[in-house]
Amino acid sequence: MERGIEHSGAWVIALFVIVIASWLLYKYMAPKSWREWVGAGLIQGFIIALYAEMYGFPLTIYLMARFLGIDSGSVDANLWSTILGMGQTGMMISMILGYALLFIGFGIFIQGWRQLYHAKQENRLATDGLYSLVRHPQYTGLFIGLFGEGVIHWPTIFSVGLFPVIVIAYVLLARREEKKVIEEFGEEYLQYKRNVPAFLPAKDNWKQFIQRSGNTGQSNL
Image (tube, rainbow, N blue to C red; front, side, top):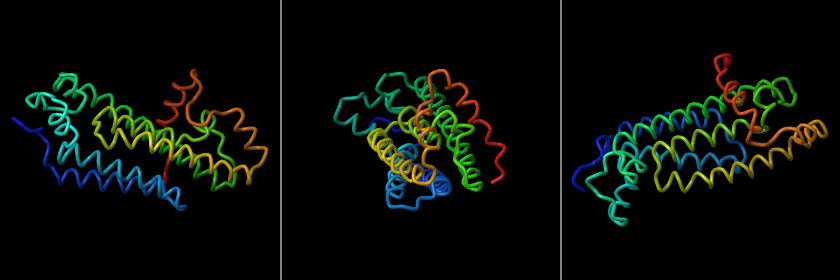
């Protein structure tokens, strides 16, 4: 390689970001069953692989430069800007778009967590707020955030490869969770399930869904 990526080798930053992201993961996901631990473990691997490459060693880009003939002299940003030859301009575009999706996803996740927490405290079914638009807003937010950070902003072999695995794992987990909720709430949940989509809001509800996700400031937890 003629020159490296400017912030590669910043292992202290990588470790710091990994620790903070992992703390948030386990604080809000709070896995209990082995299936929940599997899902959390996949996300943990996603986080480690992503930030170890982002700040530590950009393995994906170097491998592609070595085996796919990418011009090593153009390796000065992330994977998309390197492949498309857009340099720092491409890096800025993908970074802005990726962070936008990350923050939107995080807002949806936290707001969904807050609404579900209050519903459980009141021993009722969560059907208001974000839950009036999708049945699993926490997982929707998780998918959006991971896609923005690990596929758009800083894609790596591992983050791109793990993303669909994480989606499948949480779709299966959601189905199992719904069986338990049906046992508890019966026809009330079945009626709710018939009227509300699982992960993606109806076409006309996306704007409302995103707007409601920004209301996290009300939480005092």
